[in-house]
Length: 274
Image (cartoon, rainbow, N blue to C red; front, side):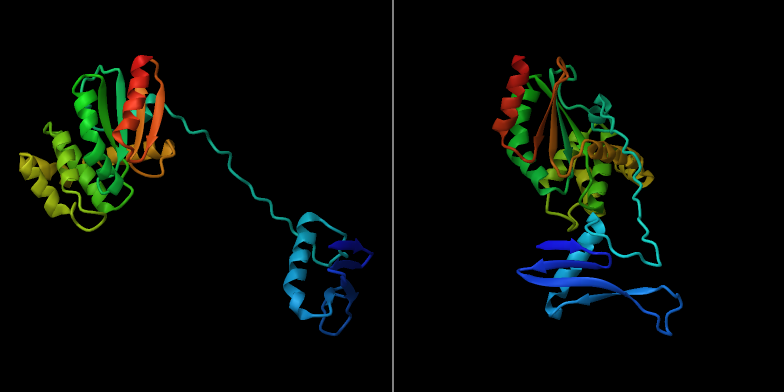
């Protein structure tokens, strides 16, 4: 495509055919401004209207050629953007707002999981991988575990997370955590509704009056919200998401999704050797 510019015409060619955009003065009675102008497009066929429109836009945006002056000035809108503040990631982003530590608090490695109790792949990880990690690394004192909430699926995700924290008041966070995943039934279909939340509490032997009062008071909503904020700061877009942290070197490695046991084993052993 070639383009040329005259004082009042903008001429271009497509596949050997020339087209011209010109401006003519119109002093008709319906015009309220003496020097008002209208643009006339001379083209052999209306079927190329869309192509010409696109070229006109390119002329305006990129400043190709010099369109004749108009009685109405062209207003350029400037987009003002607020400066983006850097997100501050600290060790608190990983360790605060989570569950009680499972395992040796002085272990060389901490495994932090961001999860949602309704999440399918969180349940896959729990059923297929977590038990082996607990047996070979947590029970041997090499690794400890912290669970942090990222309640992204629905209201029952928040309800289940809150119930687990209420169970924590009675020293049974991890028992309640396990019973939730052992009764997992999908997303937003009621398996983590109010009735089952109470039934699970009875099954793990909680004091029901205290448990109900804790949930009614919504004591842990702010903590769960803060954990969600931590996940967002870290840029987590799905669950489960894992962070493996070395107590000695402060090295942090990420593992995304329901990876098999061997993936975790490789990361643990690498940190333990260093």
